[in-house]
Amino acid sequence: MVPLLRSFRRLIPHLSAAAAASSSSSAPRPISRLLPVVLAMAAYSTVSGAGAGGRLLFRQLFEKESSTYTYLLADVGDPEKPAVLIDPVDRTVDRDLNLIKELGLKLIYAMNTHVHADHVTGTGLIKTKVKGVKSVIAKAGRAKADHFIEHGDKIYFGNLFLEVRATPGHTAGCVTYVTGDGHDQPVPRMAFTGDALIIRACGRTDFQGGSSDQLYESVHSQIFTLPKDTLVYPGHDYKGFTVSTVEEELAYNPRLTKDKETFKTIMENLNLAYPTMIDVALPANLVCGIQDPPPSEV
Image (tube, rainbow, N blue to C red; front, top):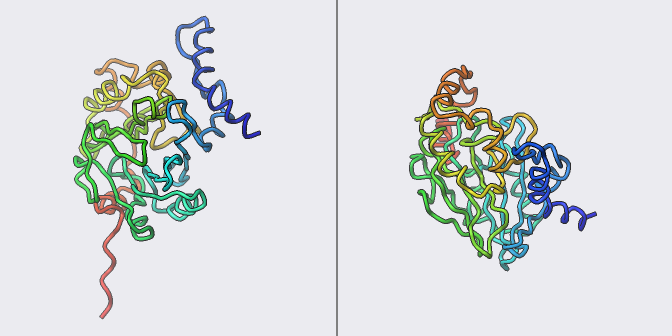
């Protein structure tokens, strides 16, 4: 069974391309329609990209209350198996750390794509439970962290790395993490887009310094310019999707396939409700998810 799953995993991008080529339409056929079950299983499997030589271990994890995805990546070719955790949630920290322990990994970075408004980040809690872990967030986010990153930075874990791409618009401090480009890096590339690009949608732009004009430019210049087979892993999903590709979103995203002015009009008329967690999450996330304890009674 395991060899079969590995074979399917390697074939996913090729099957998608073949389906697109054989279709009477020039538009790509969605991966999610071709192999939904295989994709779901592959999302929890070790990625053995041709370029990475089987170094990358990857897990996609889900927090159901806020529909948030957390991503675990590790270089299992390195003796210490260094790992990073992207967008952890406070409610699922114990689950994530237990998995890391079971897999024999060494967590070195707990990272956020932006200052979240719909859940409390788990980075601060992780730092209290695991010695030596460093928190990471964009400098533009103006939040507390151990390391502040900017566009073009590289975050190394073993011989693998994530490239930082500034993708503001949902918030002023959003970034997308993209697996490295090189013969020794995973193939196809993977983009962890946070709330900038969601499968068939995008993050809202009506608070936290958001800008629909800026978001449109960010996605088109920093994500849609990646290779078409780049796997897109969003920060949230509310419809049961797990992964997309740059090619799919270029063809099917109902908002970002439009011209900029139409996109801005769409975003201005979403009429979304006030985020239920924002009054708790935002202050906490500005200090790495650790809220000030209540004063002790005298």
